[in-house]
Amino acid sequence: METAYLCLFAGLAGFVDAIVGGGGLIQLPALFLWLPPAHAAVVPTVLGTNKLSSMCGTGMAVVQYARRIPLSWRALAPAAGSALVFSFLGARAVSLISSQVLRPLVLVLLVAVAVYTGVRKDFGDVPAPQLRAPQARLFGVLVGAGIGFYDGFFGPGTGSFLIFAFIGLFGFDFLTATASAKVINFATNLSAVAYFAATHNILYRYAVPMGLCNILGAVAGARLAILKGNRFVRAFFLAVVTVMIARYGWGVAAK
Image (tube, rainbow, N blue to C red; front, side, top):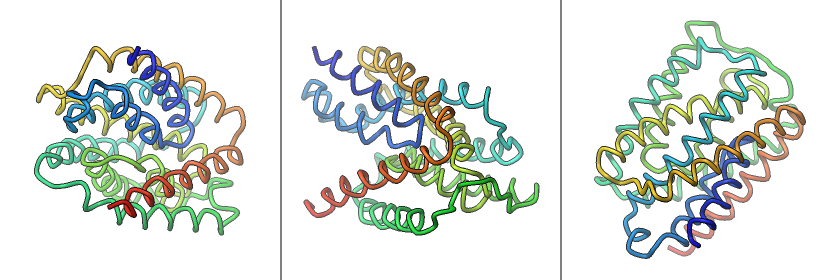
């Protein structure tokens, strides 16, 4: 029965994540709630299982977007490469550093992202390229390294931070930023999964069926985002970030 519940939440997570990120808000709590207590108590195992499931949906979302949205591979390729490396380092750091120290900082950053996006009504409405090719590659490496490490180490909010960075730094519109974020997300998930698999921290019994459901949700989410366009994605982005702020605000206050 727990597998059925986990698959349901994985499908919903894939749907939300394909549009604006934030699938971890749905899937991680579900894993902690529905996994057998002995497994749920081992945080690296929960994270590894979550990453494998998420990677399946993210990979499918990349395919869906790449077929329909022109992507700036000159910026994305170096960003994905550095994210791949630094996500592995972040996953390694999970066992060395307490992730609790990040919670207040993540909350502050999410509030800043929501306020800026809400105030700037034209933010991400139309493409507005701001960087030349060499600058785009350099910033791509820096964004990939910073957010890649964070995603491997902690994770929640990664998609939102990527979308914000691609709009603010690279001048993408919301739809292109979302598609680009999925490329980096796939790289970070792949790296983290490699680490968690090597350390035997993935519950394949749950991760595989969850991954299949995550794929179904991702296909639906990506197609809906492409169909509805920038305004829909922007509104969805603000809604998800608001939920994340409430979730992490509650968590920080509870501590």
